[in-house]
View (tube, rainbow, N blue to C red):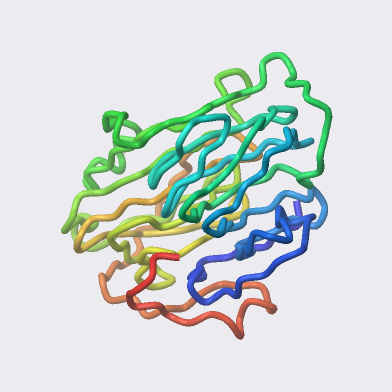
Length: 280
């Protein structure tokens, strides 16, 4: 993996681009590049389908595509994906038709170069044709060490065989902070990736609001975190099983952390704190 630590940058600060097919871009669909792995060719992008966009010829891709709709609607194979809809199309999944009458913005994850391919889905491949987030109930439990955050989640995708891939929406209660205003840091033996959907969460790199994005490689210590007004994020774990590994040394916590991103050099000139307005 060659994706460096990005913690964190606001998608609002990134430019719209077109034409770079290796990053999941179509020439007629502007995109924002959130992160890209030059070795594995994996990418995370925000795609903005314009009003009236349509594709009438069947299409299958050589790689898996995950999609979470941020705004508008897109119709694929007769299914309408509105805001807070999710899909996971495996490699070889056929999109017989696709269109967007009034436009659509979706954060999209490709696990390689999204090149055309033969229509052939491998046995055992995970397919999630459509989930509306409002149709799911919140799940509680998880790591009891995080119970003080009032955490809950909605599972969108999980690989029960290899336990190497999971995608879910994660939320916390408002007005949560570590006991005695201190908490140890946390690491995972896998990649963690997140796009902030609503509310805010404060941690060592600042106060992350809607549009905030991070890519955290395995073994990177993070936290502690808290939230004044509650928070909701789209989270993915990849390239390893998700395990929480807690350090033993408490770290002092405050809601009022300044924005101090950890970014690759090319993103530093684009980074700035984004206090509100557009969500992406």
